[in-house]
Length: 165
Image (cartoon, rainbow, N blue to C red):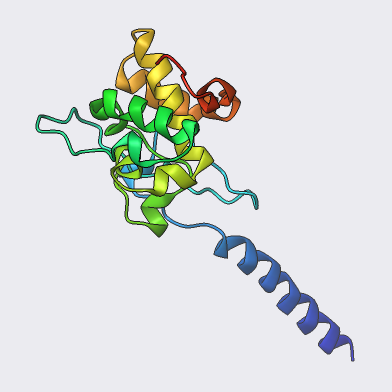
């Protein structure tokens, strides 16, 4: 009987260790950053989402026309996105649309309707615009996004009919 308890304890220990290892995944060098890593709700490392580390040369991909949206928030956010396409091209998107929609950067969110449906994309775009207006580089903006500064962006001014942006 004692042997069964030892075998059970050993098996249980392996299961516990194994379940912890299952959460780990190799993070490609393209997803690592000295600025930090994003964690999902379980604490597993999700890595930095896809982005381009280099400046985009014209012609820039088109963003959707803000006038096609019936609400002020999307009209304003898409208008801002259109003004800073080269900056958005160099930013990750923490809704992880790179994994579920194949996006390569935050700019892809505004080339289609995804940005109109996603609070994360909208907040990151507004933060990118605000920091661009303050003279920050795309690299500095990316560090702020990775840090999570987008989470505290006040979106209420962008929900007004005329945001004046």
